[in-house]
Image (cartoon, rainbow, N blue to C red):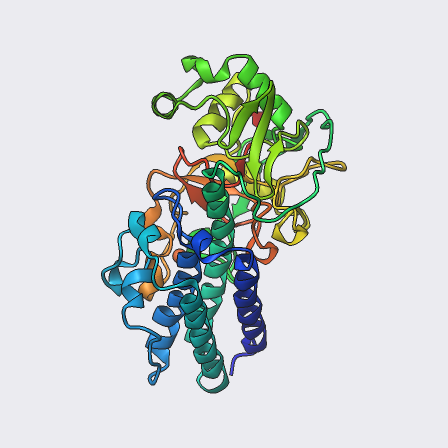
Length: 413
Ligand SMILES: [Fe+2]
């Protein structure tokens, strides 16, 4: 039996329990509705993460496993072509049945089977897939909250997922740019600990000297960009971004609205005044890029970001703080690198040199998305802390705004 058995078992139980905790404030209706094709209902997240263990582990390694419901493979497969046909993504919100209660029963069924499997048939290959399934579920925990925020923002009542007292910070410290020497450096995950396939292999890169902002761009700075006509000046924008801005009518970050001369924004605690000192959130790559150009700066590359992040302790405003909103920068030095907001980089999500996708069904996890997306780094205020690493490569299309995404500026030195 692997020496990592207890660690993976603990992680499995903690991860599964956290999903239940996060979904606890939601009614069946809250958990069923889908606000747009990119977002999934909470019920679907809860079921799909269970399906992942069922399809990747139980049906492959546990010979006597009886599926909870044979129809669920069709309903809750996301994008795995090798695992069969699936319900179309934009129609996930039409699944009023199965009920939320039956999804919880499905989760219990899978948990009992996985835990029994741990006791009698645990093997290295299955252990690796269970570990992958835990990280996969952590990803979906963040998505569940991200998608609930989008759903609740469509409701004129602007409901709160979780009430929380206001904690405006007032004024941000002036931004400083910290110098990094660059040079020949190593990037990517080693072989010792868990990492997704796209974070490997560790490889050498040459990085020219650069400077990185010591904090994220704030709401106050973003309001200055709006007031200076940043959303109306095509010279600041990439062509594709400008077309999107026109088509979608963007004039401010997603969720911002103007009421009686002030900016407000939708949060997981309901509608709140925009806090000038807090980092700007829910902006697309296109907006981040236009803002950087307006400042005479640029977005960092993912190599620049990772080199700066690697020596830092894994501390930040993650899901565990309970804040579920980005916080103003505090203290000294390079701040907000982990937690608060995912940081857009200028790097396209493409394979590292000598990349090999994971083997088997998990080969579809990342590799097939390496086209037309940009890398984001560092995790957010709704990322479970244990899910984030300095080498972690998140990725979204350049027009995505509903993620907890923000901006850190860089420049050449
Ligand atoms: Fe998934």
